[in-house]
Image 1 (spheres, rainbow, N blue to C red):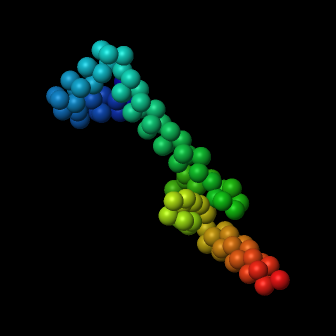
Image 2: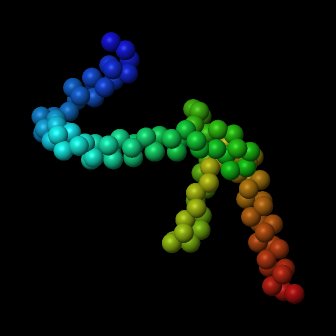
Length: 108
């Protein structure tokens, strides 16, 4: 048995009777709930695999430390990730420069 099939078999073994009945009922009805769940999980995994440093675009899905900065208004939060402190510092310096420029423009 291949590793992929073994993982799926282990997953099936971990399900309770109620889980299995729910899955079977969904599959008998066309499997839309199962499809939605699987598609959602795939999208989340792809987001992780496609994550890149906001400054240098280095891939961030590899093991190791990376930094995440969350900022913005309560309604519109932004999240950016960085491969190292140097890229994080570069980004925050750009923000400081923009802020200084806006303050200077308000004075004029």
